[in-house]
Length: 240
Image (cartoon, rainbow, N blue to C red):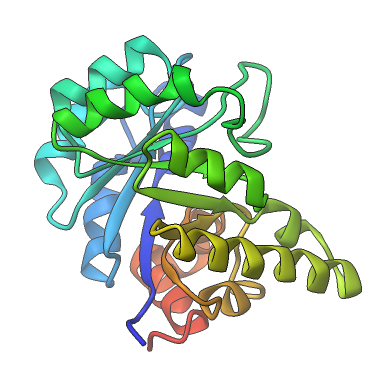
């Protein structure tokens, strides 16, 4: 079985910067440290309100990242054109609301296949691999396939927030979703709310190729540094 890759999201390095309006800490510096520690990709979310990552960060990151850049963004015409011009290796389309603290759930795909399909095709024509960030719902996964997406990223937030029997139930939903996606020929990624305490079970799910983790790694980096926090996460994933 191939090792599950770790994508490190460095958005919250930029959040700290924006809190004081300074030019530090630099998310690009954090990304390079994460790569040195074994990250297989770097994820950043260019939100419509530019609350943390901004356009300059994206341009600098595209030049600096040595592994691959995964750009999270809303499925809007503006963002599609930014990605088509930039040509990151990967794009993950996510839902977005201005008032939310962080992404609160999966993208609603079912019933929007005809709307999403040309946007996915636009990115595919630009050489960008697209995933859709969706809840572990079998119908949503089927809709993702019908829209032309080659990959999905399963939203692990409900599992991460649960305990005991509820956590076991949410993990089973993730397992079924991953298997269904694999049966449809989709690459399976996962992420949201994962920590060293809960990541192991998700990393062990059948078919999962990549985990994208940000907040908990940046939080642990306060005590361990970016490289230490990434190494700790890789160990929890069974990589070290």
